[in-house]
Amino acid sequence: MRIYLFVFTLILSSWSLSAGTAKEAALRSAIVKVYTVIKTPDYKMPWSSSIQQVSGSGAVIEGNRILTNAHVVANRTFIEVQRYGERKRYIAHVEAVSHQLDLALLRVDDPLFFQGIEPLQLGDLPEIEQKISVYGFPMGGDTLSVTAGVVSRIEHQRYVHSGETFLAIQIDAAVNPGNSGGPAISDGKIVGVVMEGIQKAQNISYLVPTVMIHHFLTDLKDGNLDGVPAFAVLTQATENPALKRHYHLGSHDGGVLVDKVLELGGLEGILQRGDVITSIDGHAIQEDATVAFRDREYTNYEYYAQLHQKGESVALELLRKGKKLKVQAPLIKNADELLLIGTYRYDRMPRYFIFGGYVFAPLTRNLTIQVARTHIHLIPYVEEFVSKKRKEVNLLLRVLPSAISRGDYSYSFWPIAKVNGKEVGDFDSLYRMIVEGNSPTVILENKMGEQIIIDRKEAEAKQKEILRRYNIEYPSSPDLRAGSGSEKRR
Image (cartoon, rainbow, N blue to C red; front, side, top):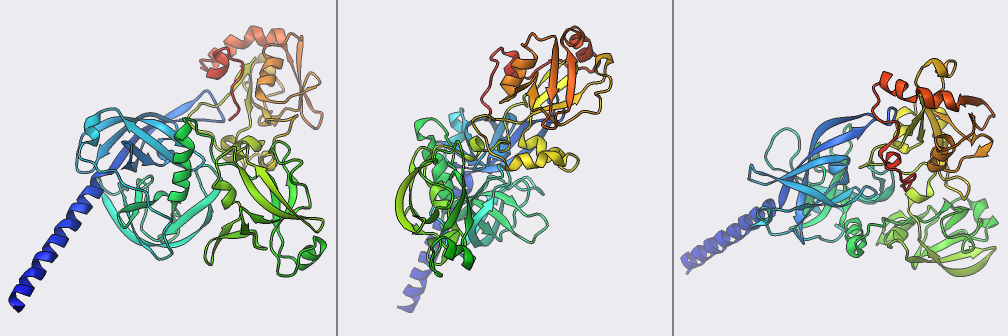
């Protein structure tokens, strides 16, 4: 009898091992390597760019789509993908990309690519200390790499690619360049997409959790990517006892104090400075501006606003001069639409135009970060918000030396407040004032009243000669050359 039992146990173990091996093989077949050729623009010389090749990882999910990071395919000119265990590369293209959440979906037109692949499913938000395995193609070799670890913490973190803050999963599995876009797997399902690692730390890496992946996929269902909405107010924590007493909060009460309601955020008349928001979508806000997303686990209170799609409303409870109120707050803008200097830009060349050797461009976050150490006067603009009067910061980016610009060579990264005495609202209006204007002189003025004066006839007459001298092919960016005269800022 014992012999039969022993044999039966061996058979069961063999079946279990075979099933596990088959399951792992099916999982690995859904992991792909992504090869991207990218064109990186130079925001200091916006007519220039450089070409390089990068690689990352991805996973096949339902609908014959490949899920990866946005930064793996940002500024792409050409994409190829390669299946695990194969050497053939297939041409791919981007179906949708959220630079905000650092996520992208790729398509492959050749149906042979997906033969025999079982798409991976998205799992739930993992628990702390839950075991995970990271799959991908990091530096150091060409074949598939698998590293193991656990979930260390879950909370809001800054997504490096966009600069915005969303829920993220920290793990201790080894992650290296090339792992980006690869899935973290637990119990056979994706629990996150590898986003970034801290290179000088020991095994500290971050995942985009499935809760944000689901937001991205749901957003796409109507064919448009609207992005994660912003909660268009500035707030502060209410930990200070004197502050609590002043705003009629009890010593054990929580909430966030509204410091500013953004002008174009859609919440004017609903919220006001001095309100204390105590609850969001039925979840109590703690005095340190956090909310519980699970028992004894807390993150930034804006998490519950970020779960909504743009255009929806979030339910708030608040105190206004000691009186309790309930309101519905519409979420109609995302951060990029509210910031005077928007979030990082990808997949397009910088905007610019040249007039008589004077180079003009809008101030972007890409440019600000690139020159922050040497042009610190630009940094304060990063913390400002759009208004009805001002949508962009416009720069005299540089002056190309010539006979007509003597004395102005030193001007660069110079914010323009007025042209011929009129305030400038956005880059399109600057273009019209300078290039399409008919005044004999163009008088540029900064907020301190300093002036730069350009003779229109001289500038127009010398334009082609100056461009030829500096080997610049076009006097303006593609959107302006197309004759549209405008391009959406974001």
